[in-house]
Amino acid sequence: MKTVTFRNKDMYWDIAADLHFPPDFDETKRYPAIISAHPIGSCKEQTSGNVYGQALAKEGFVVIAFDRSFQGSSGGEPRSIEDPVQAVEDFRRVVDYLVTLPYVDADRIGVLGICGGGGYAVNATMTERRIKALGTVTGANYGRLMRGNFSQLNPIAALEAMANQRTAEARGEKVKVDDLLAPSPEAARELGVTDRDPLEATEYYRTARGQKPNGLNRSVPSHQAAAVGWDAFHLAEVLLTQPMCIVVGDLPGAFGAYRDGCEIVERAASKDKELVVAEGWSHYDLYDKPEPVKIALDKLIPFFKKHLGEVTVVKQLQSAG
Image (cartoon, rainbow, N blue to C red; front, top):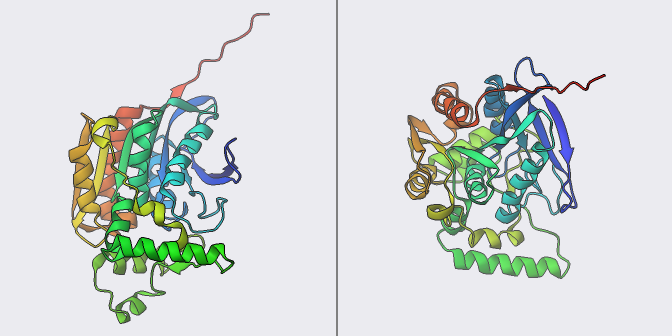
């Protein structure tokens, strides 16, 4: 693995990423590549990199797990912003970086998004034609979440509160940063949290199981308004034509990934699309638990090999004399 940072001409900050290489990696060869995108409030060192990134690299892909702008080790201020427009643009910036690497085949780039990173990956794939194959694991439409459970089913009231907070900060108040999760599973239960998804999110992010220094699960309310009006699946019926492999668990929770997976498979214009249901497993089981992760990878690995191909040898032209 190699940690890199890069900055595009249109950026004022760096994107941080981990490159995961196949066994016996050889820079004189040309590899298919996969962009692996982390969940909402997460970072590249969690499921996108240390689980799916590593597994796909072992199968012959160069995998780049990156931190979105404002999160993880990437730049951007204020920290912990979830800006869907910026998030989708980050995918293009990662592609821009990949096509400069001599060992990456620019015509064989795919994407895998987990949780909210899955929704971003769907949206990015629609208009980024350099992405040739799309995979998601328990992918969620962040815009739908912001209009639904993340705003207590009252998006107008949430927008009013966001507007008031932004005004306060414009007038000099400190930027408000909210913790999305309780500090522990026990604290979550004491607060009355009963739904599977937020409870299991707390168990993943707030214990040794998944906790990482940069996986903070925080939000900045004054910068969330754009997400309320955003939809990851807008125009999928017209623009999403690339092959798709969508993996979900069938134990539903408040974050709605099962619903979103069914919806995008139904709506997408792609002729080659599959919904993979990991029966008996939940949203957060698919982050790192061996059995459901195997169910996902047993579908994703052949899917990406079919549509991105295998490593190729680059022929070197020898100059005469």
